[in-house]
Image 1 (tube, rainbow, N blue to C red):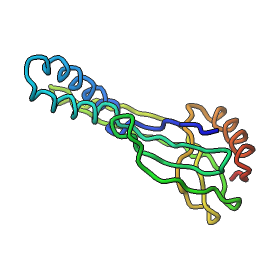
Image 2 (image 1 turned 90 degrees about the vertical axis):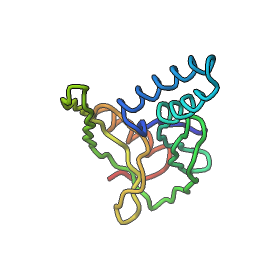
Image 3 (image 1 turned 180 degrees about the horizontal axis):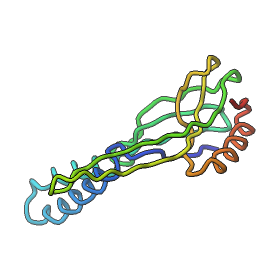
Image 4 (image 1 turned 45 degrees about the horizontal axis):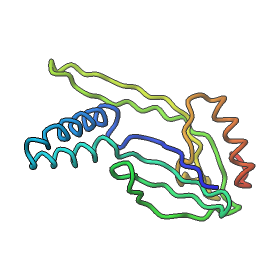
Amino acid sequence: MITNNRLDKSFGAVGSSAGIFVFIAGLILTCLYFSASILVLVGAFVGFTHSSTLVDYSRKRVKFSNNLFGILRTGKWMPIEPSMKLGIRELNQTQRAYSRGNRPLDIAQKDFRLMLYDPENKEIMAIKKTESPDAAKTELELESKRLGLSCI
């Protein structure tokens, strides 16, 4: 069984919504001008590109991928070894955009990620994203049982 855990939008919330707007505008303008298909490609790339993690429980392997245009997966599979560990990490991200009046608009995101660690307790990659610490603890227990790994 393979699960796909979506993590982040590659260009942030503002870039993603702007990319979707350019994509829709390009679709409309393509009816009039064929050269507007460039807008469709650029908008689809910016609007739909995101990162995710695939976890294969039956083969005990994991893959971090960037999904270009939302469908083309990049990355390679990494086997999960019994000496690896799972842990929780709190992540605070702030993205800044500027309005037309040159006023900053800060978008703060706080989430908790299940992280895969090597035997020396160095982070390898994020496995799953949750919104609360309680949900992260329950997911940590569930994933550690599924993958047969110890917790930090």
